[in-house]
Image (cartoon, rainbow, N blue to C red; front, side, top):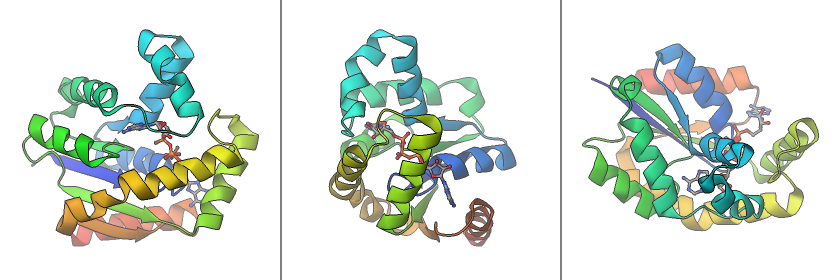
Length: 185
Ligand code: B4P
């Protein structure tokens, strides 16, 4: 059966990092809404112009825009054998739209958890290295608040499908925990 995995967790927990590694290990596409939206901003598309200031403030892009790009992406042929969703869904409305669009849209949810101080430290380090527009202290705090209010309710929404993984420690240690969690699932 196609593997359909969702990575859930606060900003900086390692979703993008681990999803990229797991995508290579499982040979299924890594679909990151954050990356798709940043590409749209970088190339100056109509979508990019609409979302640029929202992302820079650390707020969520509107559900209809994000649902439309994911719907288009998961209908491409390489996603027939499964996919790894990173950063989508981020609201209950997005999760419901995904369920309406795809039967058994999510099989397993990998919930990555880490201490707030560690999350902030990782994102500030990335700010120094990559200069992402939304990696400054004010915006990071805002993204954490938005995570707690809008995205955390998805943990209950997905219930038994959720595997909790400790995201503290090295990237390799976290990856090993994810592989163990998936093998036991
Ligand atoms: P995302 O791109 O999804 O960004 P993120 O939640 O901040 O996490 P990211 O995946 O980048 O970081 P990671 O934890 O891997 O979203 C950005 C914005 O796009 C959102 O704020 C929103 O505006 C918009 N958006 C995206 N999806 C949306 C949706 N569905 N609906 C509405 N809006 C949406 O890693 C962070 C850093 O930690 C990296 O530098 C990494 O190298 C490092 N790191 C990772 N693991 C580590 C470890 N174990 N040890 C040390 N460092 C580690």
